[in-house]
Image (cartoon, rainbow, N blue to C red; front, top):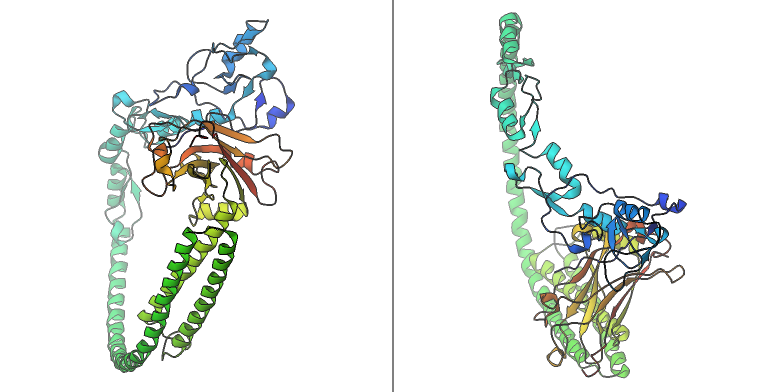
Length: 512
């Protein structure tokens, strides 16, 4: 499950004639009144109760149509209370009502039924794409015949059948097309063409016959050449068979050496398992330092094994310059790759232990933003996970997940940020489902006063906040957390680095 952001993520712009507001992008609400599939109440105007059009937001956080608020203020020259009718409502002032660009984008993406639903079209599209669907794809939309035969209006479904099977003006090809005639036109035009172009068609027939005869002679000559080449190929095959037999004999001599290397790999793997078990029981800095020394020894042993594999490859009779790509050597190389991966995981676990937080606050520094975003676009690394953090020494285990190129409705346009509950050592002692308030933040690196924040309380019916039965639950958060156009400014991106902060309210957890 994924929670949509309830706050605007764009920099606000006042309804008043602020000259800076004209430089902000305005996302026009589509025209018409389509039938919506589902509509969250947060997209309804507090004045007219309809879908917000050109959404604006009051100082007390309520949304409405730009025109509705303008008419409300014009008709009431004195101060007017926000019509939402909640305790948090404030008196409205024109210069304190702001354009909500985040809501405008989300409204444009709301799913709607095709306007011709009652006529049989079952398509469901984003509101912003409805008109394009009607004009280019909807089979129940009325169009005229593209060949201008006089049929002016019929559904696209009927028109396709018309100009495919019935239209008297649809273009057809001359029946002599197979021998080179390129004429096309209506049936009447083609009939006249055939009657009037007998000489031309006869000329094409004669030319095609001559070409066919010439190609036949060339094919016969080519066949004779191929017979000669077949004999040469057979001689080459015999030579290659002899080389293959010699290679098999040499490979047998390599197997014994490769077996020794494989035994070393097994020993290396056992040592890695031992180190991992020791890390799980890690107690103090002295133990960390000692295990780090053992990791260094493992890496040196790995380097020695890689050197041995290289020597074995060069001992082969064929392949590359001096080496032979035998199945055994390839298997051994894969095992060495696994060792590399295990060592990297151990290094990461040391870093996690050093940076672990136990107060419910995650501070995540993401370097090389441009490269990592490009990796996300190309599909190499779609998302990133943060290091784990905890609500206490024996509390919930959590992490953050970020899609630099966006996820779902935010893909390609936004950074998507999610919160993840992980399986921890002390889950059996904690209350479930997880109910703590979560705040997701993108930190302002300019003057520290304009952090982007989105907070939510967990939906206790969602599996995302039940006690984990696997390593981690399904992520929950904001697909439209912040647009790339806002993120990639000096306010939030400096030295190709961004900072993400996650704060979990630990109130009520002290007894745990």
